Length: 326
Ligand SMILES: [Zn+2]
Image (spheres, rainbow, N blue to C red):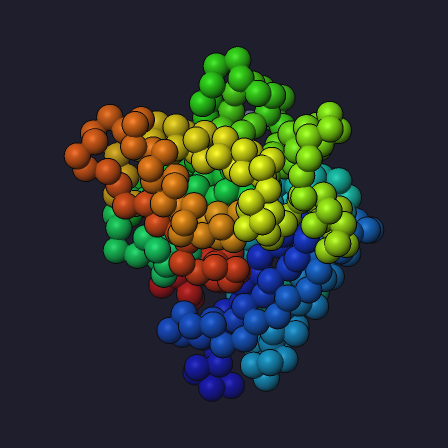
């Protein structure tokens, strides 16, 4: 085996609808990638098998075996025990939140050292190391997707608190406000999470308010209002989509500015499925919505769109492998 090949590392981003694999070389450049749908049925073992097969496809492109890799990192939704590599509470995956022994399972199937971490944490870290926040010493990552997740880097170190830091989606933007999917009231996610926005859209639609959202969804053969559907409805000037996204942007402005008042970070990166899909024009709107809530108005943080796009999660997962992080 050549020294270059020995340094290849794998990264897997496990999402609710797709699994993205990448291989990084010694310069942390993507040399191969593959994407498979996330299994919809079965249990934990089906998820682990599909992860291994997506990784194997990427390895095939680079003419290596998974066993040649220095290691593979996995970014997964849910609560992660990073020591054991066990994932719990990932409700969008087959098995409905049952514990998934991802680290041990993948190590056995693919024959490669495996490291598992939360998907938002690895995505934010990728933007810190290689993406939009490169060169910043402090960062707040806001992952605007089905929920609103977050990650914090302070003085060059990831801040995880006692394990649950960065939950910006559950910062309260309105006391006694809208019901959040977490069961509480007034959380940022209750206004900005794509899941909560879909619940609101279905409610308004059921009461007779007109919208193109569900027509676009059906035309695309989808069951959920995915990011691309929101983007298309906005392009069409759909009144309900505009109203709900406006409400989300306003809530993001208040929640993110409040977090900045507390942490005084250099850079805010807006990522996640919806954040990445809507891109810079909406990042600009979030920047404007933050303005009235910032305590130190003359020195606002940089607010940027995530730069690594769809591959950011998988690249961040690969950085979990010690050989890639070094
Ligand atoms: Zn909440």
